[in-house]
Figure (cartoon, one colour):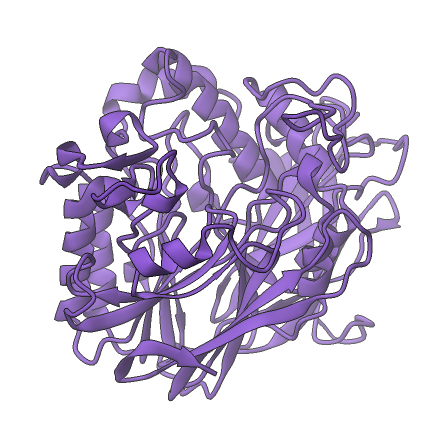
Length: 533
């Protein structure tokens, strides 16, 4: 199944930086070291447990020893610590299927990534860790079905954008209560900004970060930020409930970064050092496979997952290989630079890989799981003037790389019996759109659909409708739903149809808020186009 995973990138021009920044990342041989005898100042599993990256015979299980999560090193000694693990067929661990030990090493912040294999396909399993006689919480994970299996149904969630200060993570608790196979986390797991006590205008934030949390620039900064976010009990409950397919967007590094370009005014070399720190911290805190271990400022995060003959899901990276945003970024009308043939969000290697995944075919649904809005969208009603006569695109989205989008659309059109579905986030609103052959011509044939999940908390308490809802719909006839509440998207997939439920939490400022289904839409296999459920 090598076709499922992105090939390693060539890093010749960055080898020196990779060695300088990534020194100490080598994990070969650490399992042979003697475990340190440690006593913990507090519960060592304060960051919870997680699973991810499923295959048809296993998955990754993760934890990080950090009795004091707000310390960059978690208050752990500068020594390796042995951690035991078990995977069982039942929650009481009466029937253990696999067991072993792993070394939590200081070079990786005492994080543990165990790649469990040899499990039955399509099986729900339970897992836990133990260190110094102390048990972790119990997690639940599921292996994939075999590639050729006929899967009658699949349920999963798309979620992301979880800024600490702007809301409680109640939506994660509600996700933990859903009966789903996995979560696709599209990114913005953390936000890199420094501590603030109030929003612009003086309104207090819903919950402030502790004192001393400045902007993330160093490895220690990013480790502390993940340490804070992962103490949230609702987020921990979601991780314990099912496997995650984690990705990243911009805030895991810096706002609107693009390829080797960071925030405006930041030298490229300086940004790459920062990106190396951010990527190492991301790897340390995500349940991903060793192939995602970064080499300095580079990692390969694009990969694909097969769900029998039902769906193939390609997780894309729309940040690392993109060309910088044209016309100075933001919402722009008449940006000719965005139409240049060289513009891309994926880069040539990832585009070629995606073409190979799609050509392999064999499934009913072809799913692109990525970060920023794919469909052409007219955002003029979000500008200073609502009387602009020209289409206004968002240069941080695929509108800023129209030629790259056309190349992907051409790939999808070449797939026999294609049923494309694009999963997106980033915008802090919920959207559902038809994808047309010509994105600016709603009369051109519809070839697929896109579901943009709203944020977990970013943006704070919302409202059912955007203030410019009427104008937005008038400017975008292919838009079938728009909402401005926090929550997630729940997807229920069968060989005959795909249903997306936009699940919302009315108040992220109030603990224990319920979850509601604001809108449900359906697309039938072989009949592209969204209709009400």
